[in-house]
Image (cartoon, rainbow, N blue to C red; front, side):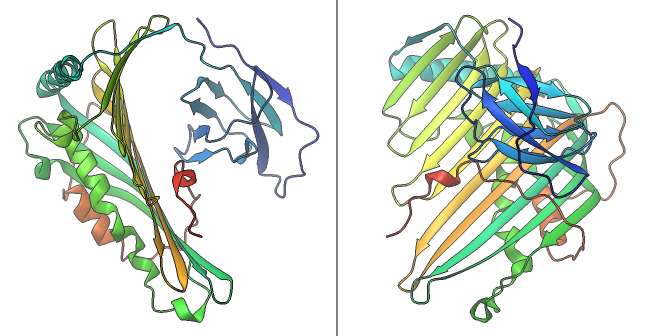
Amino acid sequence: MKPVYAILPLFLLLAISSTAQVTMKVLNLSDSTAIVDVVCSNTQTNVIAFTNEKGLLELKRNNNYVLVHPSFYSLKIDNLQRDTTVYLKPLIREIEEVVIISMSNENLFKSFIQKYRSDLANSTRKGILYYKNTNWFTYQYKNDQTTDSAFCSIENILNFEYTEAKKKSEILFSPLSLNRSCSSFSLPKNSDIETAQIPGFSRLDFSHFLNALFTQGSYFDKIGFDHTQTTKREDTLNKTIELKFVSDECEKVVVISSIDSTLISYQFRFISKMGSYHVYYATFSNQQVQTLYEEKGYLFNYEKQNHLFNSVHYGNFETMNEIQVMDSKPFAEIIKDQSTENSENETEVLYPLYKKHLIPMK
């Protein structure tokens, strides 16, 4: 089935502040409601942005974009010229859900992972990893009702080379370019907080996720927690199988092709009762990792202030036949070295998809 969509000019949107930008509004074709958290990727620059609660976002004119959302058909827009309303068609699926015993689903999960490892063992990958990490700090002071915030962003283009014979610490990366942008806290009481160190808080998590996808026996190969519910969903229309494992605080979902048993996507989500969350997400094509997304958020309640921290990592792999890797280092070490460098370049801030899960402190 081919996706159905419509693009209509939007003349009633607010006037855009710059002639270099246009405003897009993304709506549901079935009921014209706004769609939140549509991933909009610029195919020329690899910069991504997300629609807000009104389905709006501002984009560069004369660029090409791809819109992606788990509940809607994807859409490619070439040479965007003016303010536009986009209607996405929902994914209406013929789904048969079967709940079976945990042991059967665990064995099925294991068999798919074993196939992935077997295919990976026979391949060598060389190419480029486009990587971005953005972090937010927000302080809300209860006594004087003031709010202060800062963010820091790093963008990297990294050469990579992988063969199954190498250990995870020996996956070769070398930096090609770096863009870094940080904002500072404005209140004097926060002047001792080192904004330049913000990326160091989460670089290891994404590095672990990156290594786990390429390393046999990692937590990617296992369910990873004691689950209380397990489901298997078969999508007969799109020829996929979804395996989901759920507990009170964790959820792991793997989507596989029912035609050739290859991986399509992987997600692990943790949300604590206190409101903290952590999410890993990856997409695959022909048993090769294409995109990685890692996000976490923490909400700390102090006597006189609330402290909110969000961190987003995004990576996109592009495989190439010939590439030369120079001055190679482990991924985490490259990011650590670059976190102390300064740059005047401004970068687009990613919007945290899972920020809404944080529980507000009273």
